[in-house]
Image (cartoon, rainbow, N blue to C red; front, side, top):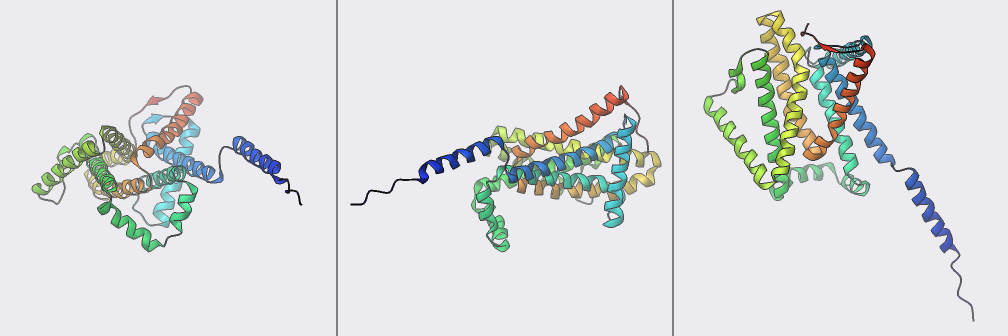
Length: 304
């Protein structure tokens, strides 16, 4: 009678398993996570350079920092205006928009498992589009997320326009919708209030807090980007103010809904708030290095 064959490969399998665990311990980042980290930091550095290019108008920074900001602004202006034909002065909001999209995409890569990622992309594009259209009507949570995005987008647009008009151009009445009757403005106002209440009661107060934080982030970022051009237009006269308001400012306001909607489709509000710290960290690093190299940094009035 034949003896049962011994399991020769059991010890080898254990060794292979141990080697895989050791390699996972020594290499904690996978290829997809490394890709996500690179995209995330590239977006954060690009966004921080764009913000610093606007802040250096109001700060006395080191020569190397001013050189970096000036040439970054010149390169972005040439890229967006001369190559793609966007209006002059619109390069900063466009660059910042693409930077935020990179941050959102990197965030989604971190949060999305690889297997689920592969399963999603096996479907056809038509089925994916149909699912995105159908889901808000069948899934209550998805519908509330769209309501949350509507609240953030509308509030950020109104606050951004109001702050620029009221504190730089001294026309606070521009908070009302232009070229629209007053009843439409009031209807929009009550719709936004009801939407915020719906978010707070259905998604919870923690989600409401994250929505408010994301709104403040977006308003702050876009006000910093738009302020140098607004001050320059104000110093140049009423004609330049009118041109800036009806071209650059309207373009920035029109850019915000698409930007925020794209961000919220890729990643949720909590993830975006957690990742926006990379923008502040990169911006703070540039400011600290500039202050250390020039031994101090002071405010100055905005110039052209």
